[in-house]
Length: 315
Length: 315
Image (cartoon, chains in turn cyan, blue):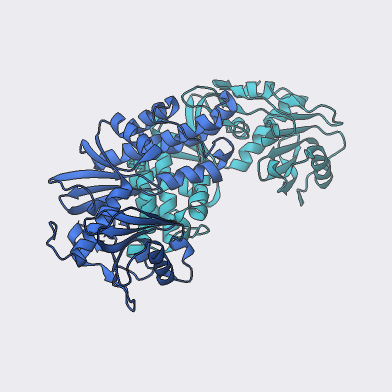
């Protein structure tokens, strides 16, 4: 469903964050503001017949996008299983190199470009991202180096030096929560849908311990089940303990390689709140930014580089 | 199916290690040797209608057990969801207290006794075991204190002071391997059924690093997927890396609280070999014992205490 803002501003492009499960489409104005948006569940995992072009044209209609308006896309649509592969840029990766390595989808009436992800090819710590590089592109301008924490199903910790990604680490924290709460022995003990606030006492206590001793994670999981049997720990409290274990272990481990005090936290809502509380417990100065806003800004930045008639700041 | 040994020795009891998935039944002679055995998949998870008595009588027939011969059982049959609950003995738990707290199943023609598990009720590290206490009972006699490592789906690390369990920790290592290899993002990258030998180079390298830095576990899981994409890591090599991560993280964390050099390793076969190699890398002196032999010895020890006509050493 399209949400249309009242604006007479000229449209610059269609922008899409095409992930594994969901897609966010915007019609972006020449100033970067969203003129309309569509949220879809036609992520990569439902694109079995590679009907990207069909979905895109249908959505362009919903967005009231002019015919022939160009399109910029980030995320899993550029993976090997996606629409057209946009091969990874390697670390150390300048964010300008991400723009320069965008891949044009052949045979389309519109000018459709897909942004590449970033790969860290080191033998010791191989890693990849797709979509997060565009969020990084959309961060407010800054100088010097910083750590960016990007919570989610697969949480990324990124080291940025100016506009260059020097290294990053992916933690499966969100996926592990789901797996443990729904498919492991703990499924009988944990209410997977519980939604504790960031000041929940069980979350705080567990998280604070794991930040100090992240190696305890595999030793503490079974304790959730045992606490249910022995102390009557409720499924909603068990959920808070599980979140505390996973987020604490992630931050405790990440802080060993990302030791800067200042951390830009990409996220919003309840999960963002949990991470903000936990990062502060770990002694970080947290600068929260909104994930959706920065990915849209990053897509706009790319579109401006490709198609704007005026000079841009970055390239 | 019963395997019957050629022995004219008199039968002392039927002994059963009744777990969640499988059951091992033995007809034990007065000297402790197995006169016959039956392996069954009628574990607790298939006992929905609580037909324990029926399964036991059918198996007694297969074992050629005399009518009225008594029965000693350990494991999940004594859990709240089992045949009759045998409430946990609390740590510090003397193994003699395990025998003294066996529960007699009411209303049976045979004298059927179920051994209790052990609970560690501490708020900080609640934990439970059922079945392992009987393996501990069957360890060769020793004096002083020792660490016992019991690999499996839910691996236990136990501190024994003489015949007293002073504390223990459960690691979900076996279950995590299965979950990650079959239900997580890594399922596309890992051959869950791969069976590398203990001297596999990927296993050794990963395990050795995690023993030193166990906090890296959540930071290294996604790297298995990335190494497949970037370096063509094969699914069988990925399985060795996953095993190395999990066993290394377990041993690295366990060694912080179980720091004794000597470790009794309860296990056999390939998994036992992986743990033996890993424990030696961690600087442990490993004394391997056979899991099945010691649980049978433990059940015999219990049966002797209950029903033997001669004096026993332990009680």
